[in-house]
Image (cartoon, rainbow, N blue to C red; front, side, top):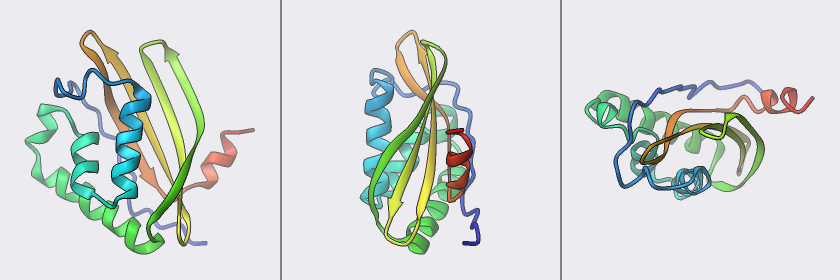
Length: 139
């Protein structure tokens, strides 16, 4: 299948809003995944760009929403997901990769988390349809 690179975003986030900074990586990931499943592009964008610095960039939010809508249009609604890899550089810096099952094909979601003094934040994410990289990472 031809890979459609509809989205490949890596966003560095300096700080998060206080309401999101208290969650665990698992809870933050679940919120992002549920927003994707519900097709809620506004909530997805809000969660992955929780930094006040990024909230002031409407162009970025619009791009994320548009690209996520494109993935949903191409591959259909989200049917479920599996956590396929967790990596950590320390107890305060972790990355989780998910395969997202959609009606027509699957996508990959990678979330990176950092635990600052007030709690966990999402520091970056990538979402695309390059699921073959998940196979490479399991070798």
